[in-house]
Structures are given as C-alpha cells and as structure tokens.
Image 1 (cartoon, rainbow, N blue to C red):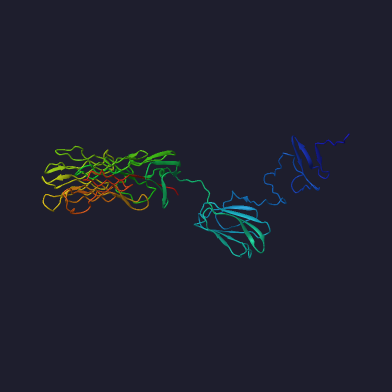
Image 2: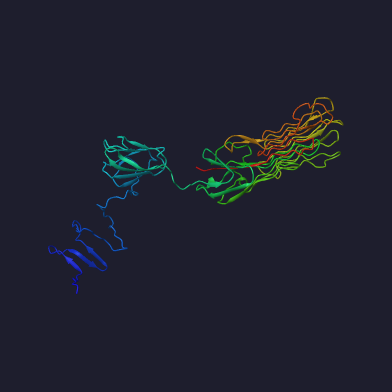
Length: 486
C-alpha cells in the first residue's frame, strides 16, 4: 500500500506563514513577496496536459527568451523624442512634428520595432539614432524613416553590423475611406478618379465614401448627335443634349452648363450598380439618348427634308434642334427646330438656324444645327452668280469642360447645306460635321466643303447636312463620372 500524507496547509516553523495553502479549489504555493520558489530538477513541468499556465496580472517573466517579436506599447503613443527599450514596439505619431527614437545599448538578440501611427512619416520624418558609436546596418549613423505608413523592426547582431533591419513594410495597409467603383475606362486627375463610357456599360459602386458630400459625384452626359436630312436643302443635325454637374469635392473647370447645386441635377450614389446608356449618332433620324442614374440627355434633332409646297418632314427637335429645311417656294423661311427638348435647367441645347429660298432659281440653303453652346447659324445668300447657290448656316458652338482632366469641346451642331455653286455651312466646334453642296449642273463649288461630314464620335456632334441623299450620321455620345478617391 502506497503511503500518503494528507494536509490542507504546510506552514513555516519560524513565523507560521503559509508555504502551501489550500483554500477551496485554489492551492497557493509560496509565502508572499520576496520569498522565491525554487524548483530543482532536470525537467520541470508546470500545468497539466491541456491546461494553461498564466502569469499573474503585473507579474514579469525572465529567462524564457524572446520569440522574435516585441511587446507593443499601445498605451503609450510616442509624440516626442524617446529612448526605446529592448523587446518593445512603439507607435510614433509625427503629425505634430518630426522627432527621434534613440535605440538602447545593443546586446545580441535585442529587438525594437516602430510604426507610423498617423501615416505622416513622409511629411515629418522619424529619426532612428543608435546608442553612442554603435551602428545601424554596419554604419555608425542615424537614419530617417520617411515613407508614409512605414514600419520597421531592428535586431542587434554584433559590433560589426550593429542593429539590422529585419523587417521593413513600406505598404500603407488601411481601410479606404473614399468612394470605390468600377466600370468604363478609368483614369485619374489629381485626387479624382474618372470613369469614361464611350459605349453602354455599368458603373458599379462597391463602397461609399465615409464623407457623405463626396458621394455626390460630378458627371457629364452627352447624347448622340442628330443626322443630316435625307434630301436637297436638308438642315444640319442638332448636337446631342449636354448635361453636366461639377461636385464641390472634384475640382476642375466645368462648362457654363454646370447644373450644380440644383437638386434635380445632383446624383448621390448608393452602393449599387448603375446601367450606363450611351446614345448612338442618328443616321436618317435623331440621335440616341444617353443616361446615368436619374440623368437623361436627349438625342440631337434630325434635319428632316423639304417638300415642293410645304414640309414633308419638318426638322425634328431634340437636345439641340436641327437646321431649317426650306421649301421650293421663293422667299420662304423655315425656322430650325427647338433645342432643350424635353426642357431641363440649365438648357441641354439650343435651336437650329433657319433655311431660306431667295428666288425661283437655285439660291437656296438650309440652317445649321444647334449646339450645346449656341444656336445654329441661319442660311445666307451667296454673292456669286446671281440666283445661284447660297451659304448653309454654320453649326452652333459646342461647350468646353475639363472633367476628363484636360479641356475638350463637345456637342457642336452640324453645318447646313447649299444648292449648286454655293457653300456648305461649317460644323460647330465640338464635333459638328460640315455641310455639303449639290451641284447637278456642273461647275466648281464656290467654296468648301463639297461633301458633308458626320459628327465626330463620342462628342455628340450633329451631322453636316446633305444635298445628295446620303443621310450623314451624327456623332455618338459619351458619359463621364468623376469623384474623389484619395
């Protein structure tokens, strides 16, 4: 039979203090402060399998060595020059100015870490200085940490190399407080990201900005330009409707058509997908609409065609109106169609110019299509041989915006046409096509252009009108979205 000693407490003889004391489920070994407990043996096991060995709150440990890590001093953020201690990591806040971390006296295996607390090392450096004549990386000199978000760990090796940087993170891994999105062709300008859609697509918002006003984005939505009319003396095509908003947090030079801060014009994003429609240029008809969120721009108006004693197809209204197509009746004026249809504020476009037939001969010409920045030009008589030709109205001016990072003019109207030895109207700045002439009786055209041209792609420019039944096409539209991303 194995012998047993059964006691609850073992006390010292000298002062009757406890050496081993059992109280309830807790057994205490030791007789208080300044009374070391020495366990002698070739192997000492503390705790049982699956149990936990814990140090009491406030207790320290020695002799166990380090595992290549530091104890991070989260309760003491450093804001001024200090001396580091072996085995500790520090958060250095240099937002108030640069300062120095002095390394402790080196001993083999000593370790110190530091990290940029406020991501300001690039503005206010943290200097790391060795103790006395000790070295950092083999050089007896201080170093400056100057990368945003940088963190480093130094280990002391020996007197030859001193402190070696064993870990250097120059990546600033943080949560992104700004709006995040995908879709279209993405470029940047300063602190802004720009999504450009030249065809249909989807603008997908994956995360909103933590600053609510930054979720109100800048945009430019331009519809497709109207086509030139399909007959003699047809009017120039109107530019596609032009709508723009410049939000306060996305600095650039906007066009005069900036609709901010009117509530109907603002787009406040949510974390969802926004289908993008980019209108095609009209060919034998009006341009196609472009849309983003609640914003729709109307397609440019079509030039229509005249009749013998009256209109068979009047010029069509649209974002900007088409030029007027005169009847085959002397001294007849036909106004261009209206722009800004349907109406929005600021107006998305302007009216086309009028067409006119001066006499019973061939002095006849059509009006130019309206542009985002101005109305289409009126047709005019041409001062060469009497009764022959006319001057087509010029296309209305487009308007200029730097939303994509540099100034670009878009949404110009198409030029009007002329008959015989006249001159076609010039397309409006911003992608408007030139008007042509029709000269069935031979002879050189008095002035260029001879052949009508289409509106430029992704400008919403109206087509130059055609006196040769070519149904010249307007330019396709574009959608641009701009927001702050850093």
